[in-house]
Length: 354
Ligand SMILES: Nc1ncnc2c1ncn2[C@@H]1O[C@H](COP(=O)(O)OP(=O)(O)OP(=O)(O)O)[C@@H](O)[C@H]1O
Image 1 (cartoon, rainbow, N blue to C red):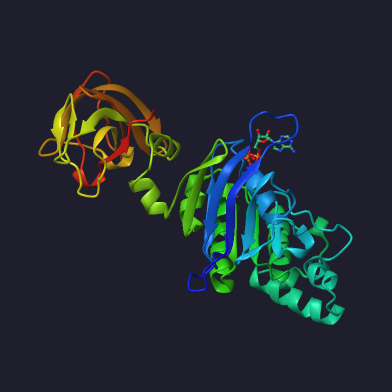
Image 2: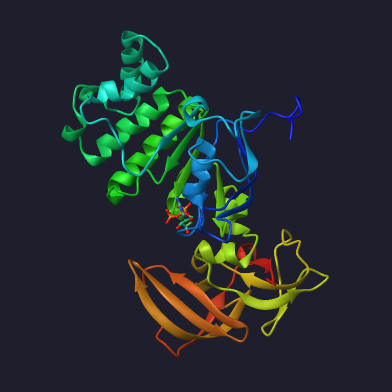
């Protein structure tokens, strides 16, 4: 579809992308639509095998979709080969050229584009400095740690001055503290350069920490795309809520007056709930507290399990089990009668599936 001149084109647009691998009956991506605003970072999140890497491969040109179109800044590139497309990819492994220094690895894309050795190296050094590795420019890949090598790979991708930067689980091989450092580095660099970026991750905390928007994929389709806080507070479906760590789902229905009718009675809902009719009331475990007073429901503790400094508790109510994440303290015991405070602002209703 052509873009109207008055509408800024997204940095990356995937339109009705369908991919079926040879030997597979079902498509891996089935009419996937995805937009990434120009200069923004989108995290692509979803269970293993849902098609995240396939999506990145379609965006980069490493894979041509059976159907659908890819646009970079409004220009269709569906059949443009990867080397002419303006997409740079960073994979889980840095894949550096072993016999070239960090500097020459980063200079490589510019050399390939015909820039002089001197120019390419000057720009490469600037990009190495951007990722904090200026001092290690003369090292060979074998002399770098995993995190440093991955930073060189990021610098090399940026040095290509791509229209879109595609990061396929670039931090998943690194230890947790290094992942945090790399995340911070990515956020800083991405914002500085305002390069349109897609980050594939399994890790919802990582997605929420770095992304302007999060797209949640499942079974070849987009479940929801939203800003991280919205995705947590207003999941579009039970599948999204569950994937994001919200197992509580009490069946009932939303009355015409916007209250949730269920075996616990008629519960108040926030005004933002526009859904009417059958649905599930969802509420995040960390939003539920123990205590009497308004907006509480009676429950019996079913199970108690330590979760780091917190306690994960499941309590049965007349409408079904409610999951609670309790802060440090003395938790109630199984079979104990408790009151659960379900703050109205944290209640949400997803339509009943099927
Ligand atoms: N080249 C291929 N040939 C056949 N099937 C493939 C190929 N690449 C991927 N698949 C299958 O397509 C599905 C989606 O794979 P993909 O790697 O895109 O998922 P993913 O979401 O990135 O998974 P993960 O999070 O585990 O990396 C999987 O079932 C996978 O086995």
